[in-house]
Length: 201
Ligand code: GRF
Image (cartoon, rainbow, N blue to C red; front, side, top):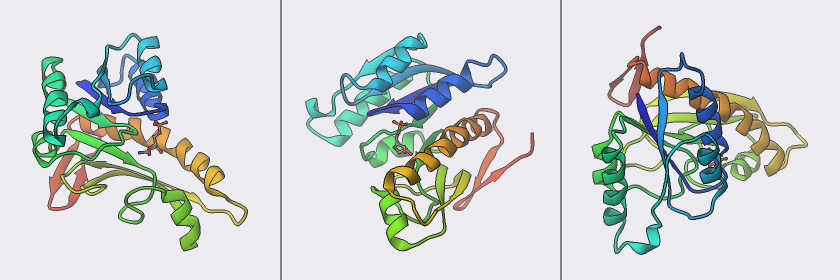
């Protein structure tokens, strides 16, 4: 399956996906990386891996819908079948989310449905939870919502600060994202209501 990855920054999750896809037995290949921010490290990672990149600065568009339509055009022109959001820091318009429903996944640095939105690690520490983690889910028009494919949990330790907890979670993100992409690319996911049902390999 041909995968497009949307990024805005550092791209460590993109790297995890690139590394997974480098294995010829992996059921997906990354065919396009789009960033809404010029000059980010994620673009360098893609270039190093020989993957075509595109910068579409959202500031040049009159509306969210217009920006999303431009991304949509580029993804379809490249024959993309699955879209991965990897640190893509823009809200998606409903038409774009609907257009890719069931074929677009996101990674969120918390155990959803807890801690949607930003600053998840600080909020987890503040809330005093003893388990935290990450979630890969199918994207719906609602932010950080949609059927869950993979979750990984980590302990929250007494001495943790935001950075130490973020690092522990990030390590699990890099395992969770390729796992989830594999499930989707192998066609093992069906959606029933708000649940994703995963078929055994
Ligand atoms: C990750 O923590 C991801 O879960 C969140 O944004 C961060 C992106 O990091 N959505 P990177 O760009 O993949 O390194």
